[in-house]
Length: 291
Image (cartoon, rainbow, N blue to C red; front, side, top):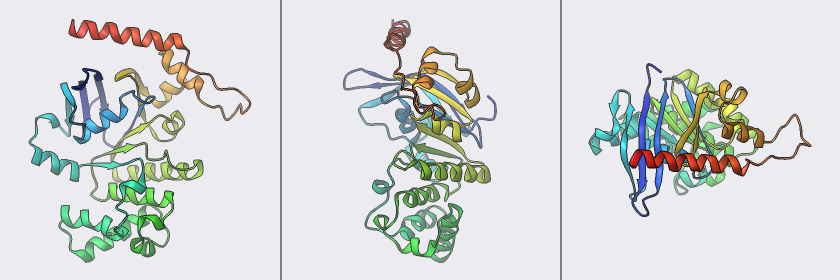
């Protein structure tokens, strides 16, 4: 893929506590204005990739090798001061839980205007006008009232919209969305996904969308990277992955999901044989890499 805003090449990460491999040669590309879904069950490594991008891996986890190229520069080679500037201005995060992500003791106005004043050097009045515009962009009714509110006074869907507004506030080139719809009911989830898609189209922002839900992938992602225990199992366009999957694990995951066109059909767990074969292949690959 050409014209990538983000390119990860052969990324390996290891836990210094027990030597466990967290990421195994992960490679992926994201183009400007594109949404890449990082999909996998718990422990697959999708959140570790997101944390590596944001520079917030636990101290006990180290990147052993690989490159993280953002906008033509390797993040692993940049000084901390420059990384802090990039993470504030050009890479933003939409976290999973809006209630814990927002400061409970500060009104929404302060939480939206502080970044604009600090990073964009806007005077208070201009920052406030921009914050109101952002709330309108994420389709929040009564933005003046919301600006005066504390997080606990808003619904879960409204809090998530505030976080989306905050992520787009500085017009970053890349947004990491860490399962941002997990805590929302299905109706609100659909609204939030549509909103993110509209904002992305308007701002031409690239998004890395971390999720375990293939239904969410179908609604918002252009491409998908499927992970298992820190290793890429399959990657391709969303249509390719969902309509003509190639790997047995991908096929099994799709089959395991609920079918809304067949409400009476039972769920099909991923066969143990597929999991065993994947783990055996990983062990063999680890041996070849470090043998």
